[in-house]
Length: 271
Ligand code: URA
Image: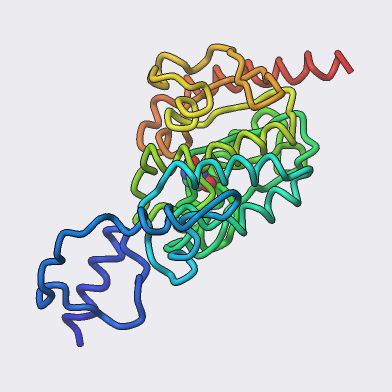
């Protein structure tokens, strides 16, 4: 009993904090699977038009291989959402991304969607997954302090992530997961249509600016991000989780936040 508790504690510390099945499975006693065509090909060939290829399997609670049809479905669903509430609904309905199988909640957004400023991070962590809200864990607490320092909070700023479901064990999202979720975050930005977009960290910046440049090269410089029909004044900056690990770099983030503050002031004069 004591040993099992120790093992569970060890798993938890390693970030493994969910059970995929109710009963344990002894994988060592299983025979190696015979090589067959990937299951997704059967799902895909059965699908036509608007049917969602990965859905039948995900409805059975099984993981599927991602495919191009799932990205097309995400694009169609995102485009069909005429407002923020509708976008949340279609995302909750989308079954093409396996991350939803291990996540507890869809982490859609928090704050005021009418704000002049929108912040976009990478993906929810453990606390965000539990609460269903972005940036509520340790890095969220730091983000709140950074917002406060330039006169912002969740009443006058809006916050979301590129990926709306927590990757298991906080692993980085795969490029395919990112492409599956891209239509949703791009539509989200288009619907909020902020004056200023802030990309928190390299992953968010690379995805939304469609670049391979690193965050140290991108941060602190104004650029434009395009999200469907809108082009938004954008500041890439350091992710609060990175700042918790590298506090000496907080001064760089502060320089970026001062630029953000001035831009907001300027945008307010233009209205
Ligand atoms: N890190 C992120 O990028 N997003 C969150 O919501 C929390 C941590």
